[in-house]
Image (cartoon, rainbow, N blue to C red; front, side, top):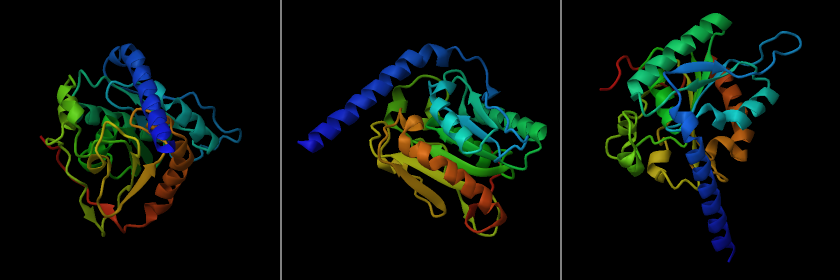
Amino acid sequence: MSIGIDRGSALLRQAGWAGAAVLNLPAALACRGQRLEPCPIPERPNGAAGHAPVVLVHGYAASVDCWTPLVERLRAEDFHRVFVFAYNGLSAGLPDLSQALTGAVEAVLEETGAHGVHLVGHSLGGLIVRLAAEWGGLWDSALTVATIATPHRGSALAWVAPGPAARWMRSGRAALPDPVFDRGAPGPRYVNFHCSRDVVLSPRSALLDVGGVTNIELPDAGHLGATRAGSLLARLSSELVAGERSQSSAAGWPARRTSVPA
């Protein structure tokens, strides 16, 4: 009986998040172009910046509002430079979004004087941050690449999704190969969060099952609610701190790529 109740509760939560996503579609579709927005987090009283900047990239047909609980948690954990990348996945493809993210992050690094940045992406956003790090210009600047409920090997639902970004998520045509690891080359720390109750992605797609990637299960989360899951809020900050600490070690990092896949 408890198994049936747990499954029913999970489906209700998924339905709730799906309903919220539908209600949020007008805001998501209204986004014109790509832009990086600073979150309204006050500076520390002593003027210190705290940890390295964090850039959050939402998923397909979502909006920056999905990050509100995480932004609050990061504030409590001394991350005082948090930015959200806004875009419309129905009007731009993955290479364009990755290029826009790269340019925006480089501007933030120049403005803040920070030596590195944490890149965090949900669903399609995970592919965007991976492309920017592995094939774009952010490799030397990325401290952490954190992907959440990301279709690393595609999703069947993407075949019915409109827009140029959707083709990069289609099962059987996932465009990004697994990161290639070079133990002698420095680079970002990879963390991949996958959801135990994800009805959008198969376990094979949600896992980035490559040596050197830290895979973490979110036991209380489905696909759409992953950015607000208690297990993510409790864990992400410490994983970002680990990314800062591992910057001086070259072992187990992916080798940088130099061209964008077609």
